Image (cartoon, rainbow, N blue to C red; front, side):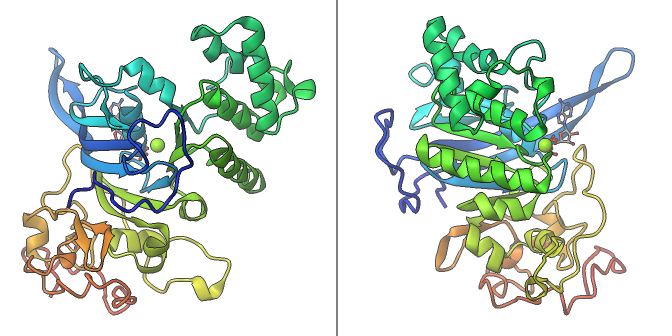
Length: 383
Ligand SMILES: Nc1ncnc2c1ncn2[C@@H]1O[C@H](COP(=O)(O)OP(=O)(O)O)[C@@H](O)[C@H]1O
Ligand code: SF4
Ligand SMILES: [Mg+2]
């Protein structure tokens, strides 16, 4: 499947004079992004192994949408975010922002990428200069980019108001005089100061109390409409991702295992890892609780990930093919927007359940009739 020619614009982005490629051109395309962190050892400090943090990741983000990114801790979400911002240089792969290849001769310069795409991190305190009043913090970026002092100040005051921090009360305050939620609002104002088109939010609400988290999420939704933004929203919290996302991308050990519209992922996720993640989330409504067992065990070491499907060491449906061949991302029949990397989704894979999983919703209790991985046979294949 060509993930980069998204023909159906499910999220209509309002006309924007900065728009180069038109509504059908994705805001961001990542193609085969890879980052392996070397591990050095010995007296000579030679590279002895590498952490495969992000391995051949490809996806597109439409204009005006929120793409949620989920996965267990250590699966490569933050590394992916840094690769998109070029805060960490990729080993290989391409980034295309509104039709322009980042870093290419005729493409988009890094400086312009960072103007168009800003990032908000989890740690609201360390992102702010403790010795700078917040108004100056927000005005700093525009000043560096050549805006006059008075204009940058007026801009900062206006942004502080827009993120819910009235300037007459907050402009002169220092970070230590603010709560966690207020600091994160300042970080959002700073991220907006250069008039970006896209925000990457990496666990941006994860450190906040639940009530504050809800307020900041609602603020993000409002700002998205007011500033005509596109979001990549990273979180380990599935409830939060469901609330804010239009589509969801699931990562496991540096790879993408499933992408789909939020309603499909939450109602009929197909990849066993996604299903296990969903089974592990708590529901206030007993009717919404899943009876499938949640995922067990820790993810394998990304220094030496399992061959074939990386999830096969924890998957209740693993068969010989799973440890031998890596499944490709495959669109589900009649749902080309929903892609999954699992041999069960490919009728020609040779997996004994191939075809059943390819019809989402038909196997709602696939885990329920499954006792769990049977590791007694030679290849670790279920009987
Ligand atoms: N600078 C680095 N050097 C070496 N390993 C790293 C570095 N940054 C991240 N990693 C490793 O890469 C993997 C992915 O990390 P990360 O992207 O932070 O995951 P997540 O955000 O999903 O928790 C982890 O195993 C982590 O230890
Ligand atoms: S490819 Fe095999 S091991 Fe991987 S998720 Fe699918 S069934 Fe499980
Ligand atoms: Mg992270």
